[in-house]
Structures are given as structure tokens and as C-alpha cells.
Length: 182
Image (cartoon, rainbow, N blue to C red; front, side, top):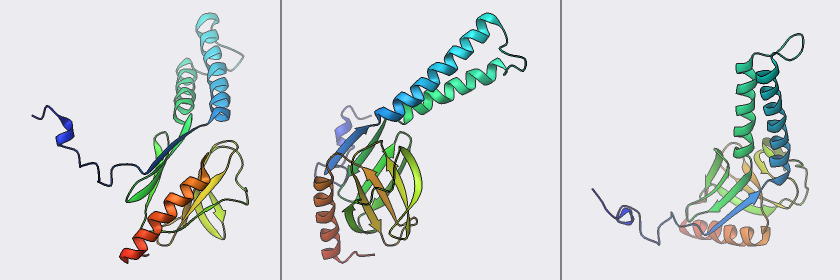
């Protein structure tokens, strides 16, 4: 048994050390889902205290399940995380995420068209290619276009697009100079 877990981890120069990490809070969706959760909780408590609501009441277990579902969604979508590693770019919205190896990324640029409004995760079109969009309400986004993967890229909300693009293009060039292009 190891007393020190650091002996099991790779050294500090490994690909596990992030080059950049950003967590963007999604205040808009947290408020929206939080209010729905509160409303569902009020319906559930009212039904538990006063009995069935309306002429065709939902079963109590169903109200409890919906309340739990909206509570979990509220927690899950409270922030999006972008991490640039030595070997890949990774984006997570709670338990949902995607990653692309730098060998597959052909370009990183700012999304200047701003076609993607709202929040959440969705499939969208960017420059005639399908991409995954990980978006918070408002703010700039960067696009990681890929060569081999399907869909052909990731669009991610970030507070620092210039820094993300600079680090990403440095990694893309380093991979290309090794000859690992897609």
C-alpha cells in the first residue's frame, strides 16, 4: 500500500498537467433551472401536505423524480470547464464532456459569427461542418476545428479567447512539427 499517492502519479512534466484551465459559471441557466427546481419542490411539498393537486394529479413519486431531475440538472450545468493539456483539449459541462487530441485539431480560432445563443450542449453547424457547442449565456467562444473526428470540432465559451487561441496554436504547431498531422 502506498502512503504517498504522488508516487503513483506521473511527474510534473507529464501530459496530465494542464497548460490552461478555465471554469465559466453559467449563471443564467443555474437561475432558470434553480427556479424550476424550486417550483417543482413547492408542488411536491404542497401535494404531500394538502393531498393530490388538481383533478388529475401527478403521482407523488413522479413529482419527486422530476424535482430530483431538475436539482441534478441545476448542479450539472452550473459551469463549463475548458482544459488545455499537453496532449489534448477537453471541455466538460458537469458529467458531459468531450476531448480532442492535438493531433486531430487543425485550427483554433475565435467564433466571430456568434450564431450560438443560449446555454448548454448541442450539435451545431460551423463553416459547413457539424461541431459540438458547449456554451454559457453571453461571452466569446473559441472553435477547435478537427480533421479526423466526427463532429468536426468543438465550440467552447471562454472568458479569455486570445490566451486560449495562443496556447492552442502553439500546441497545434508543436504537434505538426513532430509530423503528427491529421
